[in-house]
Length: 194
Image 1 (tube, rainbow, N blue to C red):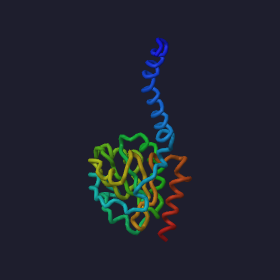
Image 2 (image 1 turned 180 degrees about the vertical axis):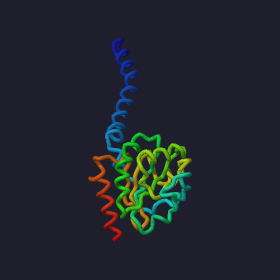
Image 3 (image 1 turned 60 degrees about the vertical axis):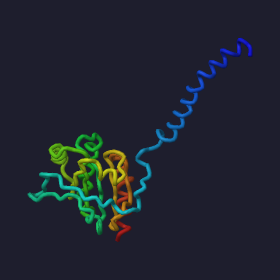
Image 4 (image 1 turned 90 degrees about the vertical axis):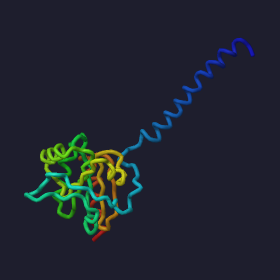
């Protein structure tokens, strides 16, 4: 081997790991980073809603009556919108007014799952924006979120009258997806069970 070929070979060997890293980063970016996380498929679509009972949010009441926790039996017979939220979640604050609007639709049952939150902060959050939920279960340790397949808060599920998950929205409810996505999926669920 000539004296000139040796430095070129060393340079190539030193650049090889960097080249490998660049290829892996490009694959990662195009495969995972470029996609819309709201369109991630859920393995739970079409399956029964998780049968996880959750305690009520302590001290939360409506018209003097305590708001119940989550009993999985509530999913049979009604179309439910299940929202996983927390007071510390920035997108949850942004979606709260839209959920309050949705909560006025008497055809729906609004269910909140309060995720890893303090009861005081959760009550303040609902006091600030209004409580759209007729049921609020507390998921203090995050176990229920795992069973629901939650990637991160907020997430919203539509459960049909048959108790099966019909749709999952990853991320916040926004003005952009409220009418064009969420309401369309709710209408599908309402028609499917009638």
